[in-house]
Image (cartoon, rainbow, N blue to C red; front, side, top):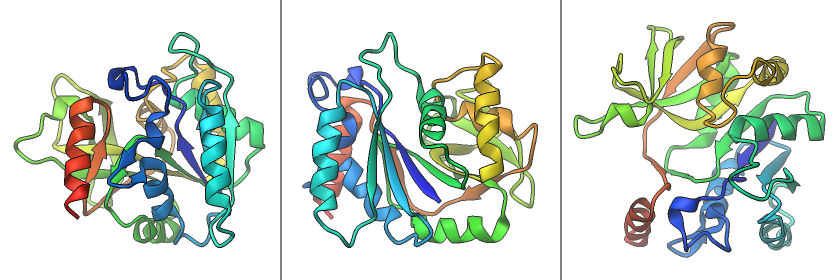
Length: 248
């Protein structure tokens, strides 16, 4: 299995913090977002490599980070891929970048896909164990609290077996209170469908759009996790996780 971290965005809403530094390398209480994500991947023995997808503008920053991490030979190998884009105008989008990595590396194995701007506390090893026993493509969800606005999330409907019955990105009229977060497990036989999705001219950006299309073609499972997941998309959300994790 390859772990693929999507980190090719430009994070313009976080300027000036991300003007000269990728969002995934922002510090959170002494460690970068990317290091914290990789820490969760490390215990999954079947993952043989961590792949970071960067844009061309920030490729050197990720290469420096990777070289520093690889100095510890006990950690999993890391590969950094340059998608060749240089701005918001020519970016490939999250699904476009995922397809780029699959074709660039000629992948033919299961993949774990994680957004590089998500900071989470759920146990990724336990979630992988559940995925390996079930055998279906799997996405992660959590029941929203009454204070959270479901129109800001991808909202899922599932049956008693956890099978995905409906998924809609930021719906005007949400059909449930189960939000989907940007961690995905895809089987090797699903990888060609990512290219098929893009060739159909569908949205290449938000990674949640692909499972929204996929569940209509094959069974996709929703795993309800315990813990927290923070999408660091604004200065306010970044300040919040900084303060939260500095107290831990």
